[in-house]
Length: 325
Image 1 (tube, helix red, strand yellow):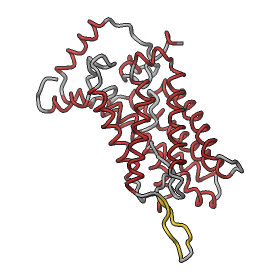
Image 2 (image 1 turned 180 degrees about the vertical axis):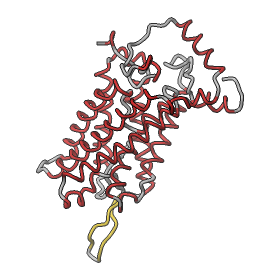
Image 3 (image 1 turned 30 degrees about the vertical axis):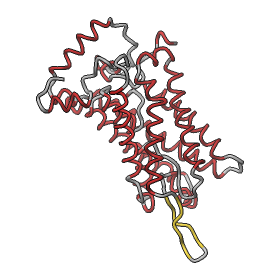
């Protein structure tokens, strides 16, 4: 399996080379060639580093359809899992829900990886753009597709569930607080804003550090194999969902989102209180992505992209001021 493993969430040019959507196998390029490639990146323009040409690439837009459909199915499946688990008479709904989420995410990633790299999450797309694995332009296209897909998934869920369930579970949306009946009238129950933000930051960072890092590092991805890496991604996400919903034990808090598009889709379709504190599900993961990027810059120079990617964020900034990277 390892000898034929493809780049997981890898460089877009490796995944879609020659206008093909087929994931390319790992290259055994000698170190010298990698160094030569790194030198070529020093003379790239700002437009090249930002990948502006991706906006005009049919292959990129076709790949984004995989992100759109994958996000739609993800939202529909995750939300139905949440609703059906809590509606069932089980002793530990959080645990069962987390296990099912891990399985669904693994299967969806395996389906979407050959098409677009298997992001289906703005956290992965933005982090990959910061690290330099994909261009910021491609990341923007992917994130827009993911948000549109999430809206479609929420609409599909709304079409099949009863109005009572849709009202009770808010279409599986991301919530921090809810209005609940109290002894002296309606009261707001849930988590404090600061707590929710820190949970979003920590969980998103752990997600990137403990699972996505294996996909970014071509050496680990090759050694472990595609199925293993994506299974680990699904398991880590499932564990984080279980932890964030169990440790807080607060009614009204739906747990760490770790996927802004998923939260956005339900908020657009359901509206109302889902917009309360919605910014947390964007700001938290963004901070986590930046923190993870800083981590990749301070680890030992023998790490996987020591020779640099041409879309690396620092490279983009330096090119903007006419400096050599």
